[in-house]
Length: 337
Image (cartoon, rainbow, N blue to C red; front, side, top):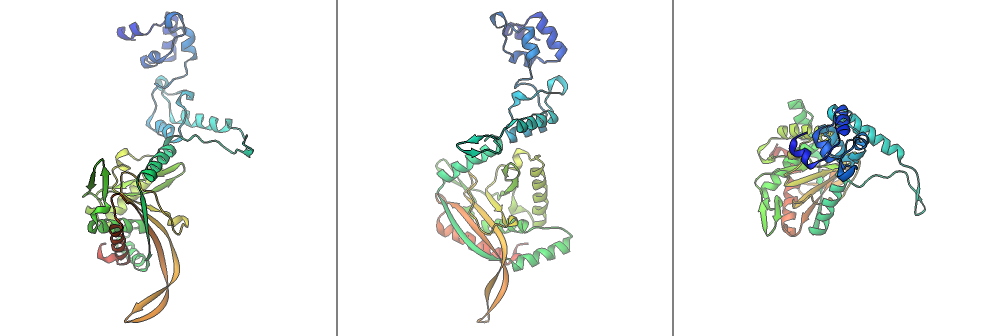
């Protein structure tokens, strides 16, 4: 313990000895509350010390604590110098779950109690702020997916890849933004900022929330490059290994719930962005096809997409033109990929 720290913190000789035996570091001693005379740290304080909030934690353990909102004061570190390891955090989490009891709340039987903290609270706060701050306006169109599905099959055969519809949608959105740059903007204080960079987020559902990895500079990338980025980011998101720079800085978001059987929905804008695209599932429906002035009915794969915009920045005509261009791009994929 340094001389300067010793002046600020009084500690008895027996407490010092016991601290050395427990391998406590200086920061932990400084964080203790002494119960002895005049605030002196005594042997009892050291013996009862369980790690506190200042003990070190491995990055993975810290990630689990942040996501699940675990109280770190309950975690005893088993690593070197009291460092909290992943196993310590998971053990504490298991004990917390087992200790929860089934009780009645206002006549309703409770199965479980989950703290409203961490990622879930951050998501809730941000989306609430967005919904109450930005006046949302919604536009929905139906898109014929026949051509894009065939084009995707051809690309997968040609490049021996497994491109997803989302990869092609990201590229199509980028092309539509190029034609309608106001969609790619933010309101910053008293200024509307239009971005050259098309940083498109793709919402990924996790067990304990939603995270939006961002594909940066889509305007400079091919569909194959977008596919590489998407696979890498989604894998990292599901393994809890995303870096902050990989889920921040977005200028537009795509939320695709079609794979979960959702046919149509509206999404809340991810601030400070000004728009988000909600993508529903593909369903086979009867469609009238007109060729050479003659109509015929065919069964076609149809997908509904809904654009939510911040009406403070984006007028109805701007949103309409963007959605019209996006529909044309999706139905004619060879024009951009």
